[in-house]
Length: 81
Image 1 (cartoon, rainbow, N blue to C red):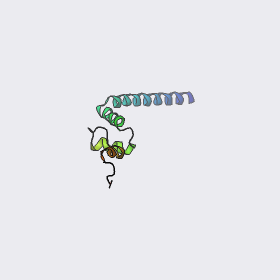
Image 2 (spheres, rainbow, N blue to C red):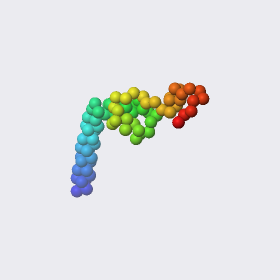
Image 3 (spheres, rainbow, N blue to C red):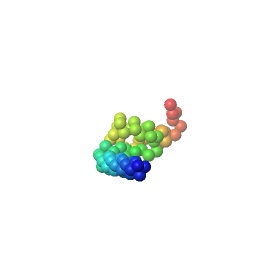
Image 4 (cartoon, rainbow, N blue to C red):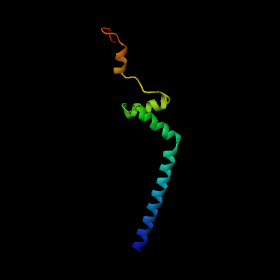
């Protein structure tokens, strides 16, 4: 009796794992997921939440410009507001 229960449980777990593997394969092949990963790669210095904001608000954006990059455009001695 316990052997039957154990086999039944093993079969259920195996079917769940197979289902999860097929769903994972579907996600990895989706265009949405690839675009998401592409955005994460381009903005690797940004926090996760900022990456998500960029992904949803400006999906075609290139690498952003931070405050250090903006400093290149200021003249020496110019006031920064």
